[in-house]
Amino acid sequence: MPISYSSMYRYLETLHVDIALVQVTPAEPYGAFSLGTSVHFVPAILEKAGLVIAEINEALPAVGQSVAVSEGELDVVLPTAHSLPTLDPGPASETSRRIGAHVASLVRDGDHIQIGIGKVPNAVLDALCAHRGLVCHGGLISDGMIALSENGALDPSKPMICTSVLGTKNIYDWVRGRSDVHVVPVKHTHDIRVMAALERFVAINSVLAVDLHGQANAETVDGRQAGGSGGLPDFVRGAHLSKDGRSILVLPSTAAGGTISRIVPALDVDIASCPRCDADYVVTEHGIAELRHKSLEERAQALIAIADPSFQSSLSDGWQRPRD
Image 1: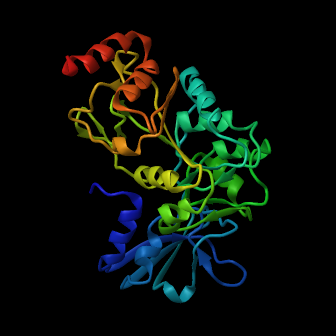
Image 2: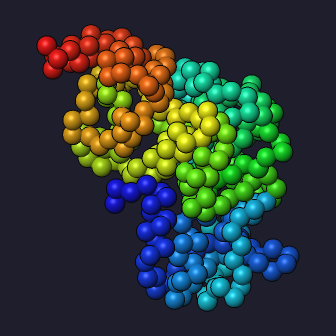
């Protein structure tokens, strides 16, 4: 379904639910369970489900704040101890590190930041370690947040807010019992009104391609569905509404070993996950294109300048041809 995370939450709230299968942490001393490090959409269906089956997973970390679940809300309880899903993007490439350095130059001390997961986002987090007073508000906390915190880049008086923790075993061990990690529902993390109230909210998200109009595709490859729109539309709009907020879309300039340009004349068969009217900053390893308040011609030239040099001439020709 082509809907954002915030819309998905509202949609789930309208459904009739027969059975909910959820995962909870072992009970706290006062008796309540919690959703631990993975809240997402569960609260949207938990209260109205006819039958709630809960796995009490010993491996699921309890954090400073999550969604509490009382024993009375659970109809069937199954003690388990299975490992959590892990995602290790591996070491950052030189391209990712160069993108990270460019993004870091757009982030200021004291900004609220949202960032996804993967090689490029991790490289961005590494590049932000020298910053100070940053505040985390986003969908995910991943391994890169460890270095950010341990290098003193985060504001120690503000919690890290997310709706899920995902990464390697290191991040699960690191967040366990931390009072400064708050895992809350999507209806809070992805609410543009919440983001609008955060001064200097910076949304940093990976995309697959950007065309010379400023439209970004984060969902399809050659017209084939490769993912959903996720939180991208929510975070981009939230950044636009935030006072002095910024949306930064990041991508390597090429794919398939440098044979395909990710900066394209037009998206053609691919989806515009982010419309051109929401375009702000686009970053590749070759630099930064600032698109907000730019004309179509200025946008195209800025994007061509951050494309891989081997494709810049063909992109310029492709842009000019329809105008000749």
